[in-house]
Image 1: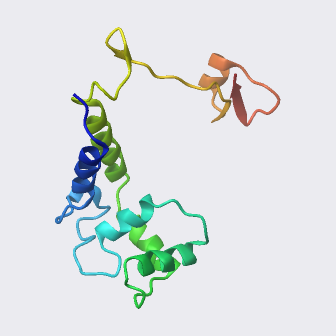
Image 2: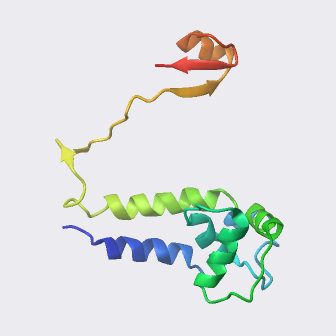
Length: 149
C-alpha cells in the first residue's frame, strides 16, 4: 500500500494547525495565550517558508499572500514571537512527518532485505574542539576544529 502525498501532507498540516498550543511547545506557559498579529499557526507557517529576501520583505510578502497587507509586523516582533516557540515543536513535527512517510507506506519506501537504505555523501564536517574528539579522530592544522574525513 502506498500513501498519497496528500494524505501525508494532511496529517502534517493537522499537526501544525492545532487550536490549543500544548505547553511543551511554548517557552513559558503564558506564551501564545493572547490574540496577537503572529499567533502560533502563523509563526510556524512563516518559519517553514524558504526565505530568499531580507526578513522585513519576507514578513511583508507573507502577510500580503495571506491578504492581510494592512497588518504590520516588525523584525523585532517576529524575533520575540520566535523565542516563544520551543524547538521541541520542530522535533515533533519531523517525527510526525517521518511516522506518516514510513508507516504503512511500503510502496514508497525502497528497502533491501526488509531494511530502509540510508546513505551519506561523505562530506567533511567541522566539530568543535574537545579532548575526547581529538583522541578519537586526531587533529589537523587548527586546534579549534577536529577534521573528519
